[in-house]
Amino acid sequence: MRPPRVRRVGAAVLVVVAIETVAVLATAQDALRFPKPDRPVARIISPSYSTEEIRDRHGEAERVMDHLGIKPGLRVADVGAGNGYYTVRLARRLGPAATIYAQDVEPRYLRGLVKRLEREGIRGVTPVQGTPGNPKLPRDAVDLAILSHVYHEIENPYEFFYRLWPALANGARVAIIDMNKPTQDHGTPPDLLRCELATLGYREVDFVSLAPADGYLAVFAPPETRTAPGSIRPCTR
Ligand SMILES: C[S@@+](CC[C@H](N)C(=O)[O-])C[C@H]1O[C@@H](n2cnc3c(N)ncnc32)[C@H](O)[C@@H]1O
Image (tube, rainbow, N blue to C red; front, side):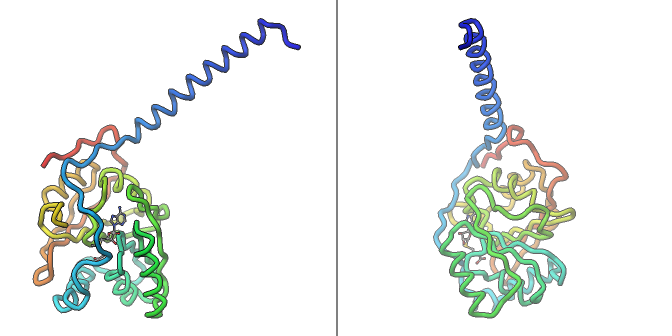
């Protein structure tokens, strides 16, 4: 049996270790505390925007893919893929050897998309189930992330784009397609988008209207290094 003094010292060491562990965990949590966006976030209500017929009649996907220079070899993530309007058109253009991630936060939308890909005999697409704050894409795996009619539904874009960053390979781009409408009406005003992404260090490199299709296409280059969550200055409306 150990003498009482040794037991007291042992207990004191345990208390110090426990306090230090709590302090380290608290600091780690604090470091990953993201500010909330200072504007409404739209609810997820549908796996698609408009109808594919109308979008194709207006040449939306062709215009977007031409503008982004989509060609075989490019590794693309359709983030918030929904019914896969972009996923299937990317797959047709990139061919069966393509690397395409069809990502979504809603498991039932993703299941529906997997069935669609099987039905249409489309290969080369990897489904990825994300969480509201994390797209969960593999590291350094994506040259282009497309978010079509998704941005305004992302609960916390500061956290989401912070966590998207590791998936973006050197020279990658992020393409956002959205409507110039308030976020609660399922759009994102371009100035708000620029401000929220700029605070994370994403730099706008292109912006075009998609007329006669709906909305705009804004393209961003990710930062070299990530902005620490504690340094993110939230945008005000
Ligand atoms: C209006 S639909 C657009 C679908 C498709 N991109 C299109 O252009 O038709 C929005 C999609 O974004 C998804 N979404 C919303 N928040 C998300 C998040 N945090 N991460 C991934 N997907 C998200 C929804 O589940 C839904 O499938």
